[in-house]
Length: 195
Image (cartoon, rainbow, N blue to C red; front, side, top):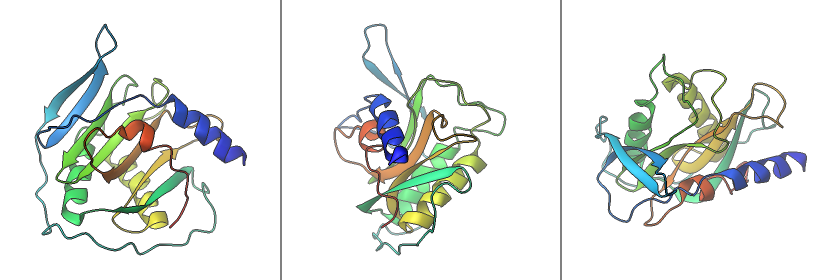
């Protein structure tokens, strides 16, 4: 119960990042101007080729005995069956924004859109990360999501190095795109830990 209360509290802090109705595939950084309006800046075009023809695959749920035994926590959007090629490409594009030596500094949120899938990194507290958010860390986080939710099923995760009361400020995840989607809020309000 305490975990749910903490996660709900964190989720309410998530920024109101709303995807534009019309977009160009690629990776974006979201900041706010002086008036508080969202500014979506395209920081990279698509880098990863789509490997598959775009067929959605069914979930193959994995049963995990315990959440968080390794510091990673994952939650599932069991109704979000993702297009395999779009999901792989969106995740690869997102990871490209976090090189080995770059801290995710707490100011912007990032997302990558490929076809029907958005992959995202939302900073819900506006704090600086304790350690580097690298492609390896993102891969480990999203692997936890896949292991708990099933391959190519939407979900999100967070990491904590200590007490759950003080998790990292960022959440990483992926889900189906829809016009007007607020992925930082909608993407962290789901608390189902397996499908």
